[in-house]
Length: 120
Image (cartoon, rainbow, N blue to C red; front, side, top):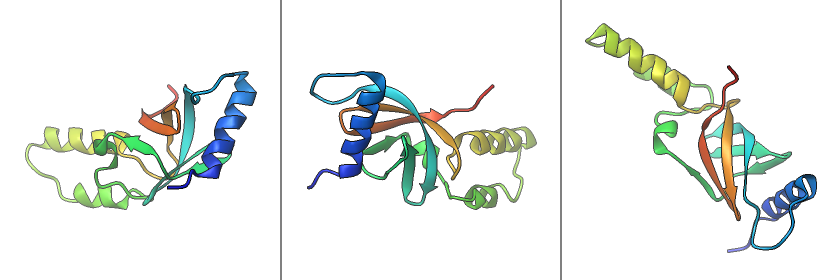
């Protein structure tokens, strides 16, 4: 399998920006924007990344670019009302959609999405 040149260029750009040196890959934590969840694509340092992404599957459960899939799931309330409201709010806050910002842990050429990043 050929190495994605965009990933190499991005890692080199990060190294040059941060002053990192040495071989063996680049480790770090970065912020990225979700460009798409169907298929999952993030954007870091002006580069789109679609390969070597790892994520907790719960963050992708009924995920869609517009968030419509999640809205369908909660269209009809269920018992108990408290459980319904909790799950609806929980999923709206945690499931990824296009435009979200995520925290990404990089190691070598792998990108581990830790979760959404929201300013408080």
